[in-house]
Image (cartoon, rainbow, N blue to C red; front, side, top):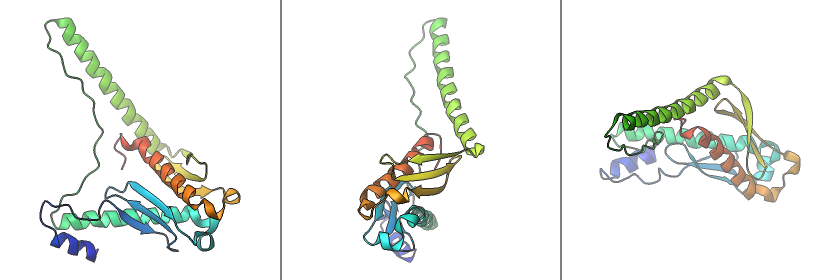
Length: 199
């Protein structure tokens, strides 16, 4: 926090503060780390040499979540510091609404057809919002598995509540693939609700 305050105070107005696109957090062992951007979105997961002895296959999933939590906490602190010094920061973009140009209307039929298209677009947007609210309030438990099948997130509603790996099928030299799998699983959970306002 002190380093960031020094950086913000020394930066000229209008010039972005360095380092806020890659905020790192690590687990207690220091062998698992996570990099997020200022919005908390996962940029990278890393599992370094020594992880097998430090956290092992039984603890690596929770180490990933611990590193992610610390990185996101640091991103939150960075936002507070920027706000304190009156600096702007990128905010998550809202849902993109694709609108079609409205044609010129010469008759009543054209106006009715344009109104129908607007109603259809609104119905799609409302259906997405309804799905998000139902998922958020459902408490439904599900799993999101990385594409390599090495890392599994436990999700309740729209919240990650845990993670696991196949401890018996994992080897020490799987660190790179495991890190990629964890990143892609975390991105998949976020992507499912990103267009609905989840951050």
